[in-house]
Length: 304
Ligand code: NAD
Image (cartoon, rainbow, N blue to C red; front, side, top):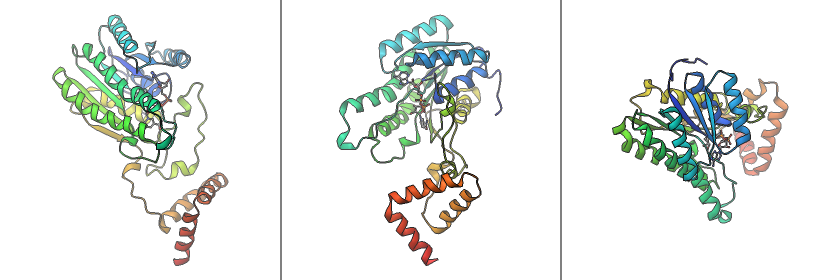
C-alpha cells in the first residue's frame, strides 16, 4: 500500500471508535500521513494499547474516554482538543455497535434507542460540536455507514435504520456546512474482517468460501477503508461532498443466480485450494440447513 507521508502535515483529526477495528486503521493511516491524531473511544484499555501502538510508529496521538452518544462527553472532549491544538481539520465518525439479531417481535425499544443513539445520534452530536471550530479553517467530516444502509438480512432493523440515517444526515450536513468549506462524506463498507486490529490482535478465521464469493476475491480489510477515508479527507477530494461511497469488493452490484454455472465455478474455485475439507464441510452444513436448496441443486444437476 502506498502512503503519502506529508498529506496531512500540521493537521489535526478526531477518529471516534479509533481504539480498535476499522477506526484504529483509519487513525493509523491518517497519523502515518502526518496528522496529529485524537481518539475518542469508550474502551480505555484498548485506547491505551492503541496510543502505544501509534506512538511506536512516531505518530502524535491523544486518547479521550468519550461515550459518543453523550453530549456532555462529546462537548467537553471537543473543547479540550481545540484548546490544545487550536484547530480540527478532520472528523471521522466511525464509532458504532452491532445488533443482537433478535426478531422484530423480540426487539425492545431500549435496544432500538441504544443503537440509534450510539450509531446515528453520535454522528450528529460530534459533527455539531466539531463544526463550531472547523468553521474557522474549513475541513472534512467522514461518516462510516455500511452497505446495510441499502441492503438487509432479516432481523436487523435498528442497525440498518441507524446506517440509513447516516446517509441522510451526511447530505443534510454537507448542505448546511458547505458555506464554511466543510465537506461531509459517507463511506459504506461491506464485510470487513477486523481481527488483526482488535486488542489484542486475533488471527482471521474466515474460510475460502467467505472470500471466494466476493467479486474482488476477498473479504475487506480495515486498511482498505482507511485508504479511502484518507483520500476523501485530503485536498485531492475537494469536489466530493454530500455523497455515499460504497467499498465492498463488488458485492452490492453482484447479480446472483443459483444456477449450475455459478455453482460449478464456486466448487472448482474451492477445489483449487488446500483448505478443501473445511470449506466443503461448511458448504455441506449450509446445504443441510436448507433442504429445498439441496433438492433444487439435485434437480438442476439432473437436468444438465
Ligand atoms: P469494532 O467493534 O471493532 O470497533 C468499534 C469501536 O467503537 C471500538 O473501539 C469501541 O470501543 C468503540 N465504541 C463503541 N461504542 C462507543 C461509544 N458509545 N462511544 C465511543 N466509542 C465507542 O467495530 P468495527 O467493525 O471496526 O466497526 C467500525 C465502524 O464500521 C462501525 O460504525 C460499524 O458499524 C462500521 N462497519 C463495520 C463493518 C465490518 O464488517 N466490520 C462493515 C460496515 C460498517
